[in-house]
Length: 250
Image: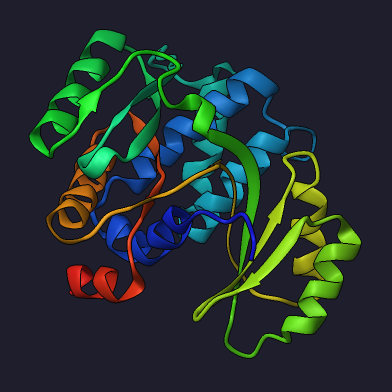
């Protein structure tokens, strides 16, 4: 059993619906520009930028949009906007721990919007450090389950430095350290496997099982937070059963 968060699985299953909300390009452009501003515009020498550009390509973002976002980050933009990285912590329905990563040009606005979303859906904003200790940065790589040789994938991943491999119904999930993430991702792709998701994410050390109304509210809260322009990622230690998740999604 790997250290993969049930929340990662939930997020992957929600992914198609999230993309349809139409804000994914806006968020990716902001993230690309920030990565380029911090680490430079050369993808090969900026691992953070490469990761985000790969995510943008997976979302079918046009190359011109990516190039403009990079140019904006390194000083080629004309609006002078810069964004600050912020982390907000709080609690959701059923005592679920929530950690929110944002990019903002106005901390007060972002904090107010996040506080409103949390309170509207059975949660509350907490103080700095109230839940951060429950999460650890990990590399997460998901490979399409259909047609994949699980034994061969495990061999490739472990040889490249992966920590763990877990087979699910629709994907095979590989867990790595942050430093080993790039090498493992590249080895898996070069071996011919279809990588459906690859990210450096926050994984909880413990999870909270939520059911019924709490589970429904938790998914609505996640959607409300992700709909905010400034919010880039939402992490939670919620564990919702697959059967219940399927019912709520339908």
